[in-house]
Image 1 (cartoon, rainbow, N blue to C red):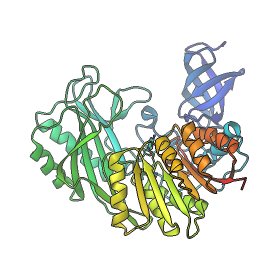
Image 2 (tube, protein in one colour; image 1 turned 120 degrees about the vertical axis):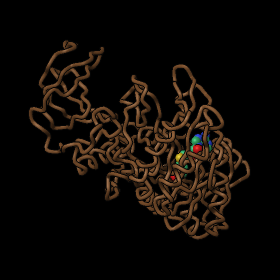
Image 3 (tube, helix red, strand yellow; image 1 turned 180 degrees about the vertical axis):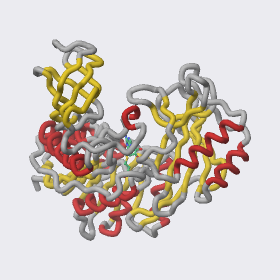
Image 4 (cartoon, rainbow, N blue to C red; image 1 turned 90 degrees about the horizontal axis):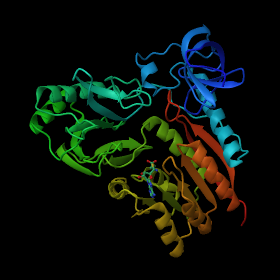
Amino acid sequence: MTLKKNDDIRLEITTLTNQGSGLGRYNEEVVFVDSAVPGDVLEAHIIKVSKNYAIGKINKIIKPSKDRIVSDCDVSTRCGGCAYRYMSYEAELSEKKKYVGDVLQRIGGVDTKPEEILHIENQNGYRNKALIPVGLDEKGNVVTGFYSRKTHRIIDCDDCRLQMEEFSPIIRAVKRYILENPVTIYDEKTHKGLIRHIYLRRGRNTGEIMVCLVVNGDNIPRKQTLIDILTETDSNIKSIVLNVNREKTNVVLGDRTITLWGSDTIKDILCGLRFRISPLSFYQVNPEGTELLYKRAKDYAELKDGEVLLDMYCGAGTIGLSMADKAKEIVGVEIIPEAIENAKENAELNGIKNARFICDDASGAAKTLLSEGIKPDVVVLDPPRKGCSRDVIDAVAKMNPKRIVYVSCDAASLARDCAIFREAGYEAEKVTAVDMFPRTVHVESVIKLIRNTQ
Ligand code: SAH
């Protein structure tokens, strides 16, 4: 590298990385710049130089990209959550579609081109879930917000543009409870203090809200005061719970919850079905986007009467149940007990009789189902970011389904798994990117794999 720290250079941004940074080349040397847009010509100030690349920050925009827009968020440069806050939404959609197609091709050898990217109308206020760290700043003031990019320093912000607007007054109400009562704040360094996170969820189509405080303990002082403050703030709050997390960990939620007031769950309506959700159950964060995703997954599943569907990584049962009207039987598999309880209740709540759910690790359950001789016609896979393990893929392929619908929030692990499925006789037929997380770097994909041998 010839570049040095504190150099000021003229740089044209040519691409965006999968982390959402702008990338440009200065005499063939790679420079990453946050909040930059492909097409920008910048004066960049070099703040770090490593062996293979440098990191710059924008000093001045010499010529803005045609896709550049003015950020409508005060904290977007410090936060880093919204990598696309500086780019028009059309440009974001086309970047995301291109990214999914490129990654599938490069890592997975998938030549199928993505269909038109699916997206919702409103790119703000879509998140039905917020996980907000609580801490103290240098002066000892209580701060709630989000971690500054790549650090654990909390930036005080009550009204993230992505979250549903109902959350801001609730966050401020919890802050009031903390300030006016003898409540301590958790300190990561000393592992002392009580309140760690505020965790909120809202059913978009019912309005029901859950407020959860994640605590390093199993009780809170002046419980009734908290309940009074919250229920006065928003009459749609239906559930107030504590989540116990006494571990020295970056994992936000512990595995025990205690209901302080109201219901243990909140309800929502998705794809015309009613769902009950516990604090520990996974539930998609963008409900309008989820309906687009599930509908596309249902199209790809192409279920016909008499067919059996296996819904792996089923969470609270949402994908499988949304397809139950087209199947003879659905079997859901999920590792979190509370989610399986929700899934069973959700089947009942919607009068769905042809569904059963198994609480087990995907790989164990796949092997059990295989040994029981279960022959699903269609398998839906919706694993966490890291994708499926080899033995899940092997067991699923041995069940010999006609079609596999793979839903993924990480195109790279999806691509890797598609390559393994190809060796096992499954080819990609169709793929769609779904913009479930507008303004952030994340993008969802759904792919249809079909068996190419009979
Ligand atoms: N299909 C659901 C959930 C998808 S998220 C929906 O659309 O809402 C992925 C789910 O996989 C989570 O519920 C998570 O608890 C579950 N999970 C993670 N690891 C697992 C494993 N090894 N075996 C089974 N389920 C797992």
